[in-house]
Image (cartoon, rainbow, N blue to C red; front, side, top):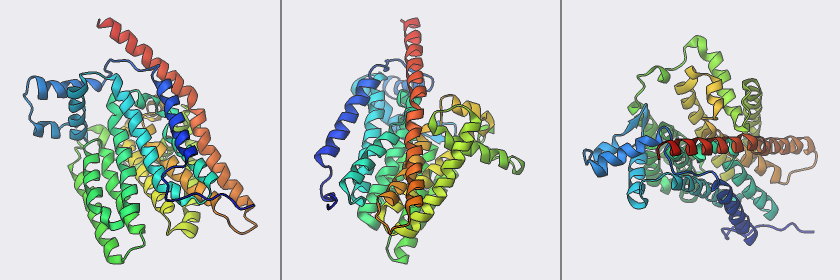
Length: 402
């Protein structure tokens, strides 16, 4: 019996489209139970930006563009939030739905560029389910329900947009990538790593060496410029000392393993080690078998960007310790990007028909995919608890100010 192959010219099959719609309905129905129209912590910054620009008019557009929060340039997020306040009124519940819309856009866009790499319809459908499953991991509950975290989700969307443009337009995407990466940097300091991810992806394209050098060099220069503008004067922005490097390496692995929604730091370390080791194996196999294909380039860019995100987060928050990072899984949106890149690259290897005698390899690869799916399932308990906790806290604060 001949396997059913996918029509790569079509954006979605009816089954894929229905799966996305049903998933979106479920997410919106679930999240709507926990939204509440009251600011939390850094959300008050958004009110202040709006007041200074639209109410007291003490700020110009340039002042908004120069907004910083610690080492982070946040002019883009400041401008976006005050415009949303102006259009929809000062509120916060709708930001939760914007967060969801951004995540859905990221997942859908990534599938559009990766889905065509899977020849069989069943493999393509499974890839779609996997992408949405990872993108909506409950370990991100605190971030999804927090309006101020829109910036991090926009950085992830910008990363996916860059990957899509480079795969579709090759070197013709350069100008768009420069604009998107520069915009992303105004959302969060992590946005600087989009330049390096783009540089890596351009360097892996099957193009002339001259074009590779030009596109890679321009993006590498963009990263250097962004990094040079970051304000690292506080204790939390200092690099670990030489003697702290072993402890710092353990901390980074704990962050990498935190995507399972487990607060035990020892367990997170083991899981992080498993993910890191699996990544080395999968990327090595992918390079040998698929180095000229889009799946390898996209996965490499995702993992590389996520590694930069996590490292930057680690430098800034290392002094607070792993228990603090695991309390509400502060690095969750940065970690799921790594899981996504690893998972898609692994799925591509599993879906590729090879010679006989690779049963053990296929079993190991399938186990890696299963482990990544378990990360979403295992974090469901935390996600539900955090959603309820956030809702009750907002209700309590809101009533106190009525």
